[in-house]
Figure 1: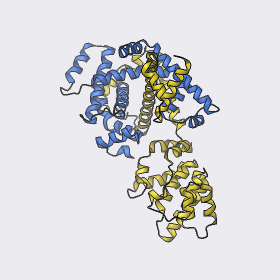
Figure 2: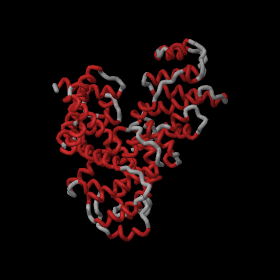
Figure 3: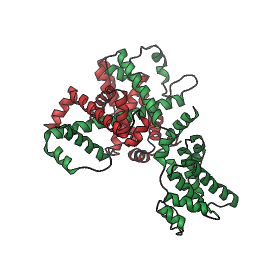
Figure 4: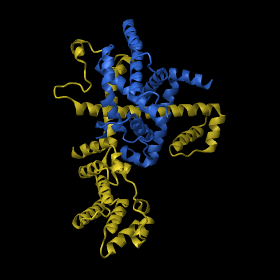
Length: 200
Length: 273
């Protein structure tokens, strides 16, 4: 399996950008880089579940950055992932605010030449909030929207995966679900604030 | 915004998936502040859905890896440093990030469970031999794959995508060579007659084995595997796909190497269940 072989950084970026072998690429990221993140987080106040969640968020953020063409390759994949994971964990510690000591420990452990990834971290936070709203939609809407906007299935293909009779019913359902999600986003005060800033 | 205008914006959003757009709606977005705002929210919603999908996909791979790599002694696949073992064994779990972000409630935990389960179910439901066939089937073009072909009636019929004529000409052909068998198989595949396609492709492979030739061998092997997927026979397809993947000189090696073997194995698991 490809995931058990080696990708160069360029091959990995190529595979993720093209959207092919994505599962293999994700497996490779886990096999290759999760352990370092795990060790770091557990040495800095986290547990195994924290490490798991942080690395998952990191992988999602990395894939999105690559797929949007924003990964410039100035740092290696390893460095980039480490920076994201460490800073995301730092952010999490600040939110938990369990002890100032841990913050100090973390700051001391930061590498001097670590890239500034603060904008990625705030983007990850925003995405997490939006994901929560998708989850609030309920299973049927969630599935309809994912099939259409993530799996890129046609209405005809969606009928095969859903308990609806025809394409028109699916089309209407998808419209209503998207409206519901847009409504939830509009009602979210944090996002509304961001919106006002953007449209100023 | 009228409901019609909102609908037009959603249609525009969906049209972008296929690279099309309406100038009228673009003008509305540019000139009407309310439409601009609505357009922004719609894009945010789609972005959220895509991020959720990716998050689900990563979670699924993570879960699969966890199962796959689970050590017999019950160790985690993410190795724990030796000096952390005792601390981990005695510490009170501080909880997952998702839980701490929420209100540390059972409700949040239940939500996570529902989301995780639905992720697995979602992927489990959407991946099937049929969906994989839909994903990986691509029409075979005679002139681009094998150089300029001699223009026989069956080649002409095939190039014109007249599948019925291809099958009719193949049926009436006296001595069937591998090209005729292969094109008949492709025509059957195009007409969703996967069982008949399998017979034709197997015939090509058998003829080559008997005559020690390789005329249309690679093509027949690849499309035989695709036909098995079409017929919901992933178990039969897998050895052939593995063989092609392992052979860098095979004409379809790259195509197969680009396939998701994770999804193929998931479909195989479902078939064997």
